[in-house]
Image (cartoon, rainbow, N blue to C red; front, side, top):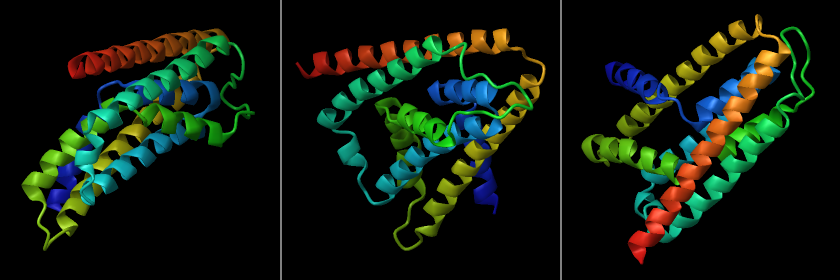
Amino acid sequence: MVLFFTYVMGGLAIAMPVGAITVEMTKQGLKNGFMHGWAVGLGGMTIDLVLIAALYFGLASILQLPFIQIPMWLIGAVFLFLIGYESIKNADSGITLAGEKSDKSIRSSYRNGFFVAISPGNIVFWLSVFGAVLSNTYNPSEPSNFLLIAAGILTGILLHDLGLLAIVATTRKVMNRSMIKGFSIIAGAVLIGFSGYFVYEFYTVIMDIM
């Protein structure tokens, strides 16, 4: 239990920095309510679970190959740009204030979270975090330790998401449509900024290979 709660705190610390998932989760939470923000977080955690499984079964080296990561930088950039563009373009539509029912589907919010999480940045992060954990704590005769650590980190991220969305849900009660529209535009610009960073990383990797 000590090991588990230690890595719960680690998961909380990991989730604190603002990234593309946090931006999209906050935006959906403000525009469409708690469940939509929660769906974005679950979409992101689906990718996290896949990466943890990949590490557990020894596929980390494949994910680190340049010919795997190069197209993913570009794919991630395209997805982030499209989601950011959609956020700006539709900033004044689909807004539901507190107490109103959203017309947007939970599935589309989950899909956004899933696509935002598909990026080499996220993959490299998990490889570095869990790669270090795996090398330091994994014992083939006691695989439960790694699974316990993974569960602790994911629980910490889950608690962060719940806390963030609780704050968003409270803030949403005092926000009007214009304020939510403004945040949606800012969130879209930030996501496009992340897209530009991915394009830069794509270019850098290509130049390193050449």
